[in-house]
Image (cartoon, rainbow, N blue to C red):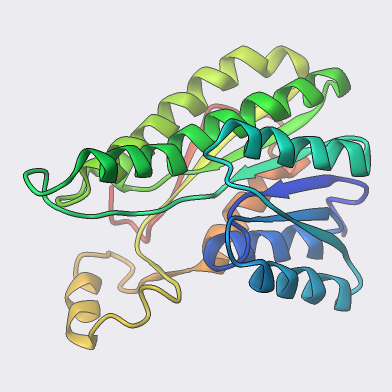
Length: 248
């Protein structure tokens, strides 16, 4: 059964990886999807065309959502073009890994801006539109690094932990307007970036995962679309960990 019919969804960082999988699954469920990207317009347009070829509706919008004008421009595009925004998935993210002694302030600030500030800015802009309609679903993509911490990722772990706090605080603020705010915390997920890791490293990392395998982008997309659906209408302020048992 189509569960997102007539819903307008915005997915940040949706030109590849987890964001792409989420955009495709939302569209498969009947949502009209705005595919946000920062640099790779061709990849974003490829996602749009894949959705359209499957009978869905989508468009792309380029913006650096870590900047106020970018985030506001993205949400304005959605509301001006489609009249509303029902679903926001804050997925835009980056890494600049290093041990703290070698990590520059720019490495820290850049990751915080792309990961945490973008989530705050897009949510702030979207909530205005959602409150007028008295309906909204916000799903933030965090990470088990924000729960467990990860050596060499003080910036990334801090940004993802910040998203967890933001999720819970915002859920309390907007619940009276029928807006839910949840987060998905992926563990090790196989993407274009991680698929090139040496086989021995993958095997060693697998040994720490109770289910014995890395997750797929589809695993994360399934969890995200559930939280964005009306099947999860009584769930808010929740962090859904999708990690094969790694963080338990």
